[in-house]
Amino acid sequence: MGEGPRVSPGRNIRGEEGAASRDAASPREEGGKGGWVLGADAGCFRFNLAQLDADKYENDPELEKIRRERNYSWMDIITICREKLPNYEEKLKMFYEEHLHLDEEIRYVLEGSGYFDVRDEEDKWIRIAMEKGDMITLPAGIYHRFTLDETNYVKAMRLFVGEPVWTAYNRPADHFAAREQYVRFLAETV
Ligand SMILES: [Fe+2]
Image (cartoon, protein in one colour):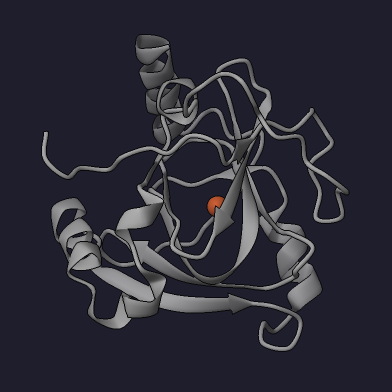
């Protein structure tokens, strides 16, 4: 199987419904299950953390390989913090609205940290702690949201297959083909 994406246990966090928030005091760690839940639960995966060295992102053969294999031709870098992101409050609010996209959402954390929340097969939130070196790919049609953590800072690479489309469709958005496809995929894999 080679060096495909590997998934990593131990750092994903399953939040209670409604409990996830930028100001949440202490997200509860998912312990004792002995494995990464996202591959099966949510049709979502991320690349092995150890494989990507965020200090080398400008010239990293591992990153190049992923981009080549997955066709991530486009990229830019976004910094989310009060000083650098115009309309910071408004943007944060937007990122934290539950939504989906018609394309994959790919983020690679270069500095700082934050949380992605995704819905599992029972429609409960799974909280994913993202730190420097973590890359996540959310499939088209998955409901999700993003928030900063208590550090209030993240610098991340945004990747895209082809020309980027950032349109977010807030829930409910079940009528889109991408959503139907994702739901079908869940039914087949769970
Ligand atoms: Fe999104």
